[in-house]
Length: 73
Image (cartoon, rainbow, N blue to C red; front, side, top):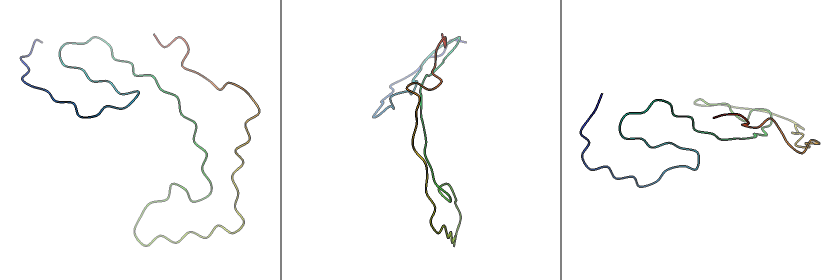
C-alpha cells in the first residue's frame, strides 16, 4: 500500500542492516558471525555468581571457510 513519508534522518546504520521506506517484496540482509564464548559467558540476571575454575575456550579452527551465505539471492 503506498504511503506518504515525511523527513527521515538516519544517524547510523550497521554493516548488515537494512533501511527501507516504501513498498518492498523481499528484504534479505546477509551477514556472517562466529562467536567463541567460554563457560558462563551469556549469563544474565541480578546478583549472579559464576565460578569457573580452570575453564578454557578452544578457539582453534582448522578449516579455512565455514558455512557461508552462498545462494542467498
